[in-house]
Amino acid sequence: MLLIKSKPVRTLCGALETLNLLTLRLWWKNPGRVKPFAGKVFRDYMSLVECDKWVCRELHEIFPEWSDNRIVLEHMRGAGIVTPVDELAYLALITKNLRPMRIFEIGTFRGRTALNFALNAPPECIVYTLDLPMDVRESYGQQTNASDAAIIAGSETGIDYRGKDVASKIRQLYGDSASMDFSSYYAKMDLVFVDGAHHYAAVVSDTQNALKMVADGGVILWHDFANYGDYNDVTRAVVELLPRGEVIQIGATQLALYRKPPHTPLSQIES
Image 1 (cartoon, rainbow, N blue to C red):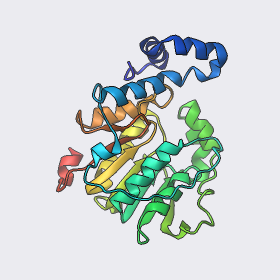
Image 2: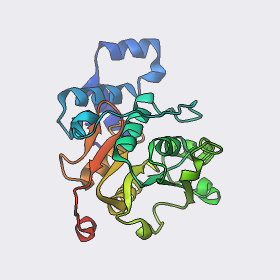
Image 3: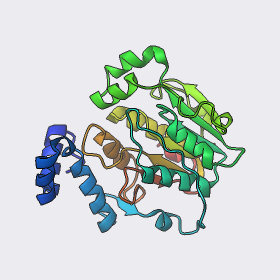
């Protein structure tokens, strides 16, 4: 049901698929919170069943070779986007254990995730983070879904990491990821985080570029995975581009992960 293209049909099917007495109680007590409930229930279902439309694993199952580690989190008020603490913790743990020298993030917004990448990466790491230039945001907002348009309108690029002790590790880039030339980053990134525009064409383009940028053995992460609402195209694009079983939902979160095998020829990725 979650992979249905039509949002009204998908929303209806999602409600029917996850309907229970708690849904009705929520509808009665706080109807504004009913919309995201189906997605939350489905992600919880995936974390319990572990394999259905894709694979779901906890982080220690995905990376059994990793040791215990200490992370640093900087959590801030939402200001339009609220990143759950558990998702920030997963991003920090992956960064701490992977020890990346190069990170590329598509979609800066306020720079909260870029900051947390920088806090947990080695001192020599460079975090590249890409956001739309100011002069194209209004026109771009008219071409995307309502949720993304609101985020673009309220974006203050990098405000969350400015003045912080690790800000020197962050390189702010500006451009449209759909038309940007990423070739200078090909096969050089140890970690790529895809969290830009959420409509289908954008996610396909960003994912294809991420697959080219990630180094052998590196990791790609997507945010807003397994979402019934406006961001559903993230799920559809990712599961269509990658073979079944290679996309892993992390726990009950909206984070999906892919680990590139070692020694993958670029020609194989481009095909």
